[in-house]
Amino acid sequence: GIMSTDPCSFSSGTRAVTRHLNLVLHVDFDRCVIRATVQLTVEALEDRFSALTLDTRDLQIVSVSANGQAARFTMGPKHSFKGTPLDITLPFDLSRGQHVIVEVTYETSPSASALQWLSPEQTAGRKQPYLFSQCQAHHCRSMVPCQDTPSVKHTYYAQVSVAKDLVAVMSAVRDGQEVDPQDNNRIIYRFRQPVPMPSYLIAIVVGALESREIGPRSRVWSEKEFVDKAAFEFSETETMLKTAEDLVGPYVWGQYDILVLPPSFPYGGMENPCLTYATPTLLAGDKSLSNVIAHEISHSWTGNLVTNKTWEHFWLNEGHTVYLERMIGRSLVSEQFRQFKAMGGWKDLQDSVNTFGADNVLTNLVPSLQDVNPDDAFSSVPYEKGFALLYHLEELLGGPEVFMGFVRSYIQRFSYGSVTTDEWKNHLFTYFKDQVEVLNKVDWNAWMFTPGMPPTWSLCSDVAKDQDLSSFKESDVKMLSSHQLIEFLSLLLQEDALPVSHVKKMEEVYDLNAIMNSEIRFRWLRLCVRSRWEEAVPMALKMATEQGRMKYTRPLFRELSNYEKYRDEAVRVFLAHRAAMHPVTSGLVAKDLKVDASKTTSL
Image 1 (tube, rainbow, N blue to C red):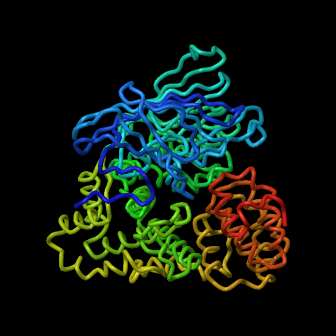
Image 2 (image 1 turned 30 degrees about the vertical axis):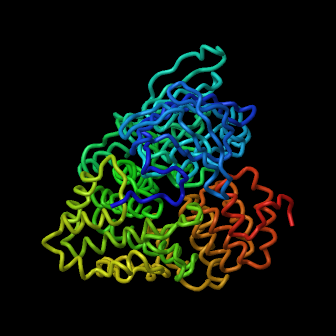
Image 3 (image 1 turned 90 degrees about the vertical axis):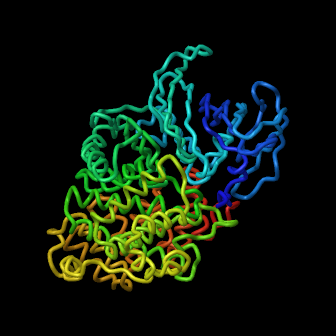
């Protein structure tokens, strides 16, 4: 069929496609901008091709050339979240299959949505500034003019000039460094990414970084304050990589490094190739939150090697990745552990459906994103509804071993490409051609295009009984593993608010305020605020602002704003911290709190 067009991009991947990017970046911390040149190797997919459109957002374009000749360019009207199309007229026609090198010289804006510039005070070391990018879903265009759609995949080379007391790393293999010939107070770091990947996986970090080896193909990077803690926390990385390879085939990206970011990083992890990003909230001290690393490792196959063609098919990335992450848990711990994690995911899904509302089309497995900002659509739905569908199919089709055969085959079939739900489903029907009558019994429309909770889902019932945590209410919480305690608190969050006397009693007996594991603390503080325990309000505000992982920050602020007495206080604290927050986080929290985006003063 026709290549689907991406409602989130101005660039048409059907008329021409980028094969390679060559980036030359000069990082300027004084002005909080990157001065840059990018050369895009573009292949025409039709005859008489001469008009190329690239995605940009808040970029200042200095010049454009094609094969060395000046090219005319205009900027289209600015769109609220898609940015501004850069329309380039080539000085010649290409025929189908021909390549052109389009060179764009430009500068990013200090408010580029992909970039967060941290002052020395916002870092652990407090001496050097810090820069990190976060391009997923549609923010790469604020850092590089490109075909910013996951339907287009390309390789890249980069060289990055930074002040000599800083280190640069990217989502690529490190390829040496040298003194900058233009300025001997600067160093140029070089990178190459020989595996084609979508633009949202381009990533750059600059800071006072150190690294430690944690395996034959892995290092952990962070400021020196966290590097040893991180090396301990993520010491199981190679074991997880090997387990994943046993499940789905060779790891093709060469290096697998982990970078621990400053606290304002908005996500738990980000699967940038060769350099997974991790939030410092994973540093629990006992490796108990390492399933996030299993998740990011799994993305090396589902997401990075096989990529959703547009963000409407995001569940293909996330549902399969959660499925693989839990299969890694099954291999390393037990089937019971996998079931237990699956139950937790089901509760997270109920939570998301409740937040959006059961009839909100953004709770569809495959939502329409026509005129929808992908940041607004982000939730646990593609992760957990996607997992629930794959788990349901696994049960129907013969269990985990049988279904893993399909997952392996799907990855082989679509490696290095981008894929839609229809293509996935056609492959499923082809692979299980002997069980088509079983597949036809699945209510596909209810799963894919109907909002709310999925139509059917069963968990192995004896395990569910075995792990039914309501009985723990009376028994000793001290005996629970951190995984079980997380589930116990999740169960309580599913119920109506507890009387404040109950949460006070829980605190008295179990000293929950003292637990610093971020997953436990986050649920405990939500529970306390929901029960209107005033003593918890300052702790909840502190957690919501000391780190910026949206999984914690947004629900904590929502919970606080529902507490009538402290609603104004929550808004005041948000406005006071907003300048230090990641731009995507502050925008979404402002929406959650119904604060006018233009308001900067307190109420």
